[in-house]
Amino acid sequence: MIKRFIRKVLRFGTRREPEVYPAAEHGIRRDAISHGARKVCEVLASHGHRAYVVGGAVRDLMLGVQPKDFDVATDALPEEVHKHMRRARLIGRRFKLVHAVFHDEVVEVSTFRASAPGEVDEATGRVLRDNVYGTIEQDAARRDFTMNALYYDPATETVLDWHSGVADLRKRRVRIIGDPRARFREDPVRMLRAVRLAAKLDFQIEPRTRAPVREMAKLIESVPPARVFDEMLKLLLSGHAASGLQRLRAEGLHHGVLPLLDLIHEQPLGERFVALALAQTDARIRADRPVSPAFLFAALLWHEVLAAWKARQGRGERPTPALFAAMDDVLDKQTDSLAIPRRLTATMKEIWSLQPRFENRTGKRPFGVLEHPRLRAGYDFLALRAESGEAPGELAEWWRRFIEGTPEVRAELLLPAAPGEKKRRRRRRRSGPRPADPGPPPVLAD
Ligand code: ATP
Ligand code: MG
Picture 1 (cartoon, protein in one colour):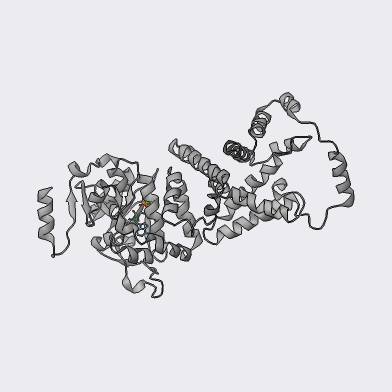
Picture 2 (cartoon, rainbow, N blue to C red; picture 1 turned 45 degrees about the vertical axis):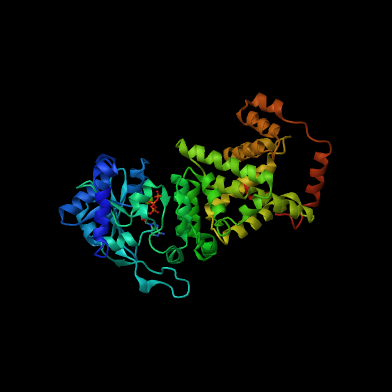
């Protein structure tokens, strides 16, 4: 410790050298590095290049967390990496990267780059382009947080650290590299990343990093909604969605991400429903079970849909068209800040529109619901609604038995038709579909 401190003092004012941590101090075992990442580093080193495992993988390994994937940073140009690796793809037009392909993994290999000051938008301070090759030191400086700027060299088993990332890992804190305001202005997504990583690792955001977030939170609005979606999906699927969203709210960052979440927290039932959905998602992720992003977003926005649906019915609209219009109201409002891709919104609508159909338990209609391709998700959603107290527990239980039941059990479960129901249906048929009626919900079509 003291020796390290003296070295640091001696270095002050001279060219910056990294802290070098040997294996005994960083604790990463060489065999914890994926086969592919080790191979890439070996091959590049054999051609005289420098190549390091970098970013999230080094951070996670030092914390004893299994990394999602491995990235390599090198002084070799993309074309050189491509030439030296047996199976590799050059990707990206503006900034080239190489994907080195192995039988069970893909390693992303990037050339050291610098952030170019000339490439910052004058008005907003946002980085427009980030495509200048640089030294390893510059590569470290352009990364977001100190703990994400650690370079592991498999050959010497050392970790290089220019920004005291190892010290921050030990203090369990997320600290931005450089001036927080400038770095958040360059890329406001870094604020979301700070929260996501703090939630994932159960870290604190260092006070100086955290200080400007609340007032800069509005900048998220200028980020392309598709990118906000990607970052939020990472947060929601991190296994720490509940604490992640709580932290987002605490930092005032949720306005630009899930503006509707504010309203949900004003309704106790809605809040309970969202909390249950997030807890269930986190439990599934931690147990390595699959999670459906559509289900999750459907849950986050359900009480908004309910409120819009009720409002429309209050204005005299009929239930089914009112529900479909309410779903569009909510999705349109949401998409301005965070663009949920169409493939997900289609499924979300199916899950939502199944809910009122569960209420009908007479005649042939429940059998139609059984055929629905989203029955499983729709039923899970109903069960969650029941657990939160918004739908009758008896209804969810009835459906569980109906879905699992034999034909005899199902026949017994069916409720008698309400008196007058047939008559009403016949009358409607005679008068033909009304112009305002869009007909059955589109989910029936597939
Ligand atoms: P995860 O565990 O979610 O993969 P990660 O830190 O690896 O976390 P990635 O999105 O995979 O996150 O990014 C890899 C690395 O690229 C980061 O560790 C960081 O060094 C750098 N990086 C990513 N996004 C940014 C950003 N917005 N600004 C600066 N550096 C970034
Ligand atoms: Mg990563």
